[in-house]
Image (cartoon, rainbow, N blue to C red; front, side, top):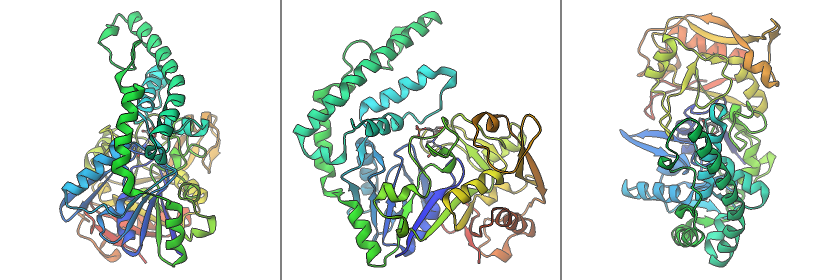
Length: 449
Ligand code: IMP
């Protein structure tokens, strides 16, 4: 029963989509188990570029079942946009299944996300403003609207009405606060359209929302299913099921750099809850990490670079977000954090992506420990927020490489320095590097023994 989990081992954007796409060749089913359209990945296939936010990466195969699991939060408008885009590109979506238990991101969640971030001002988290946090909060409060609710107008109306009331109140308060702040700053409060004003906001009008969502339900109905059972059937038939994580370990709500995290659990263990399978259904865990490190949004990032090397990483790695277009913060690979991710997820194999980006950067640095503000040596990832915030990394310096590696397909074709760099990562983390990305295209990879 091969259940393979693939997760991000850093702060996201590691190139998981490409790894999932490659490993999916041997799978029957690919399941997203958490997050929502805060994620985004690009797959380049036969020169054509596909961008996904919600639909699992395996959709480009004709013979795979792709599942949006119960742990995902679904913005139905975004999902239907992706389905339409794939249809236009001639890609079939008949095998896309959506858990009836997945929660829906409603328009008020998006407004609340934006309003909440605005309220935090310079202390904001830097969310993607896609409504992720407020949607998961409603799920925990038992005020959520689920995919199955789209199929019953009466239930839908009752549930939206119940969920809406506290939102209107919260948005009104946030709006008043925002206007006050703008007034103090001498700005024109009337020119601001978000958050919703004092009057009724058409985006969160009960009647409009119910009508819109009933229509979404009609279109999504053929895809709505008991997706946990789909996974059991595949696993019981000895087929390979891939559980595809979004975001990454250090953005995990419990184990990441809280509060600068997302509102779900992107760690491997969460695949069981978010897809509806048992722990022993998981037989292998792959961690995906870049050959350097990036982060979007606020929060601690010990190896962040504010110099020319960091700029070159942004340029050479095209480090701009697929979802928000934001410039990513860049820095050297952090092996202290990676070793933490390896243990936390019990990673069996590493995929190191974007090795080509390090070309020509001179000697390569890898963070092997931190030093606290008081001078203490920290060999492991500190659990205390304040210690992590002020920790400075200490590096090992390894030889760099100037050769073009985009055409390499075998380990021995890689420059000596690149191989030594990979060997160092494997040795330090105690996990083999099995796959290396050497360029954006699907075939630009090197499989290692
Ligand atoms: P949220 O998930 O939109 O609530 O954002 C919370 C934090 O997670 C912010 O710092 C985001 O930038 C970050 N984040 C969310 N999704 C991704 C992703 O797919 N890649 C990288 N960072 C992400």
